[in-house]
Amino acid sequence: MWIAGKIGLGATDGGPDEMMRSLIPRCMINGNWLPSGYDSCAIYGIGNWSYAFYPQFIAAYLSAFFMSIAKMLGMSASMIFMWGRGASIVFGLVTLFCVSETVSVVFRGARNRGLMVCLAVALMGAWPQFAFLSSYMNNDIAAMCGVTLLVYAMVSGVKDGWRLRNALVLSLGVIVAGLGYWNAYGFVLVAICVFIATALLQNRDDMVKGVRLIAVAAGVCAVVVLPFFAVNVVRYGDLIGMSTFHERYVEWLAAGGEVLQHPWRDTVDELFFESNFVQDTVQSFIGDLGYMAVTMPYAKYLLYITWTLIGTGLFLSVVPRYARNVKFLTVAIAVLAASAITLCLYMYYNLNTDYQPQGRYIIYLLVPLVIGIVAGIGKVYEFRGMIPKIVLLLAVIWYVSVGVDFFVTTVNEQGWEGVLWTGLI
Image (cartoon, rainbow, N blue to C red):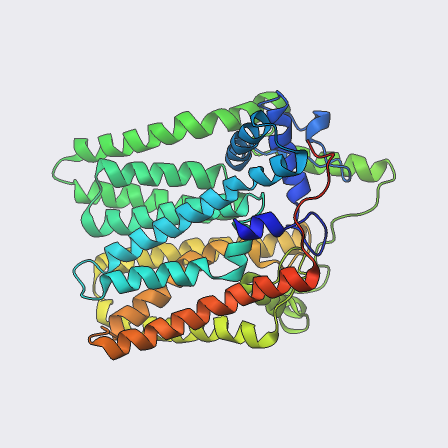
């Protein structure tokens, strides 16, 4: 909430694409609750672009809800805009809750369960790019929230068995991720496949029960998600809106507009080995903010990289212990497949649409990364006795302090003062 009050709207003090994202909820609070991509209130000033061509509306509706409250209370245009950021704050909080619940399932019965839950929340919550995405209007954090719901549902459903509760959690994950952002669709696809396969296997002695559970979950998803895609088909003859979005951009170019998208033109080998693509993506995944205009001191990057390498190494060291556990392998392979799809979508966008090595497009990978780090630490060390717990506590305090210091320093050095423009609503 503090960061949301400090972020502005410029290249060095704002969130990327926030002005374009904010057009949809601003249309809504002015009476147009289902804006078209052709409506003037939803069209951005350059490129003929409009996110209203896409069916992902869930973040916009939640932002509009908060903005409507602020408007009814008679707040200024700047304050109404900042209240729209409340949607991202909510999605961020739900993400942390789902991660904590997932770790709680993983460590059920373990003596250090509570400690590992707290560790997971600290590692995720103080990750700079996650904190930043939880602070301004964007769809990435909504999709990330959906991914955590899906991961929790898979872990609990595979480990404890599918019941109505976790099946509905999976449905909610499909809804939030499906109406959140395209790059999360790998997790949607994999979670659905895992759910159907394992629900049927778990109920092979009573297939009617398994089919009924799948039908209920699918019905909930269909009722909420399909209308948005149906609207796209009726309005544009375009199920996902991408073709129409691109056609509008082509019209912009034909009318003399400048070229705004620049896909990678060289080979894939040059992308990986002769450019800064990997380094830029990793740094942005950790803490390059905005349009990568605000960067961390390199020493701070090393802290997050060190935590990641140590945690991942510990996790890999315990994998052989669970190599014959079918439930573990099911979830592990599913998450790896979903992560691979996410990376492929990211690569495809850079190679064919627009070269943008921004970690926010693959931020969903932070969910399995944090869970894996915590699982590695918690399975190797039980933290019996006071001294190991104090050592871990001091390490976490240091970790969190580095993240807080980064934002405090950035706010002071960059002169972030929040939204000051009065003509927004």
